Structures are given as structure tokens and as C-alpha cells.
Image (tube, rainbow, N blue to C red; front, top):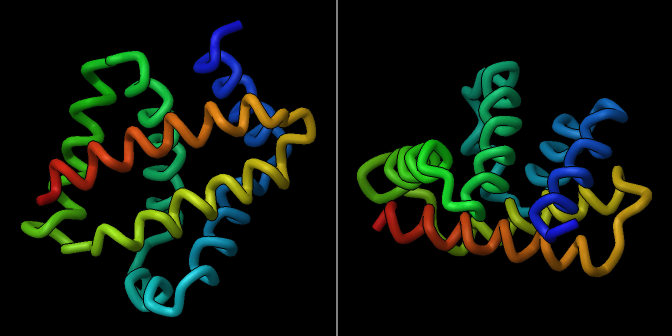
Length: 133
């Protein structure tokens, strides 16, 4: 199995257990004092749908999927300087929180699959940051 397929299977294992997205937000919002205020007026029911879709787009982006690229472009625009103006350094908290959550939920996670996750996430985040400049 290729690394993208391994990440897809890992993500499926994470989401099958239930509570993955909720746990992500617990970890993420506690990871930096500046994050929780940014989400003060957020509809978390909608936000959780967006995150589920966003993680799928991160995975598909690694396969040069145009729908995923367009989705990440929209995220870059909405989160960039012409949108919410999210500082580039804050994306590492998102990435690290997602990886912590994956480690907690995927009991079959190997170092190789974790490295594949990290590579996919890092590539997508760098794309989002570039678009947002």
C-alpha cells in the first residue's frame, strides 16, 4: 500500500471510533492561548463538518486532486491576509494537534504512517499559507 492509502486507512480508523473531531478541538484550542478567542463566535456544528472535509482535502491534495486544490485555495484565501489574517506560525498548532489526535485514536499507527501523515499535512499547510499571502 502506498503512503496516501495508509493515511486514508489511518484516518478511517480514527473517525470510526467517534469523538475524533471533538477531541481535535479540545487539543487544538488548548494548544495556544490565542486560539480559543478566534473561535468565540464559531458554530462548532458547522466547523466540525468543515474540518472533516478539510482533512479529506489534505489527503486528496497529495494526489494532485483539483477539487482538493481548489478547496485548499479557498481555505488559504479565507484564512489569509485578505480574510481572517491567521498568522502563519499558528498553523503548526493545528498540525501538531491533528497529529496528537491521530496518535490517540489510531491504535495501529506506525512511525511510517505518522511520517506520511506529517508530510501530507505539511505540504497542504504550506500551500494554504502561500495562497493566503
